[in-house]
Amino acid sequence: MRRLSFDIIFKFSFEIDTEYFIPSFPESKLTGTFDLASKLSVQRAMSSLPLIWKLKQLLNIGSEKKLKEAIRVVDNVVMEMIGQRRREIATTTTERLWLLTL
Image (tube, rainbow, N blue to C red; front, side, top):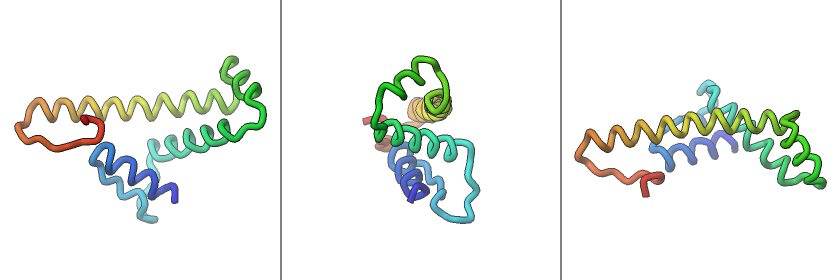
């Protein structure tokens, strides 16, 4: 299910066909990091004691440190994709709709 979710998000957001949902497709650093960030975010949301994760976040330790690092990696990749798309738009005359350009 996570493979399908990842593929759908990237297909519609960035027009990138990751083919990640194909079982033989190798897992990349981005997909693993995206999965980790998703998992840690869900764990945080389901935490019965928000004070615990807030303290971990403040001290930059444990799962909150991992989440921060995972989000940084995903953010860097997404920003590079956006930059690449902007360069593509600037050099071509065809207009294609892209979710992040709306």
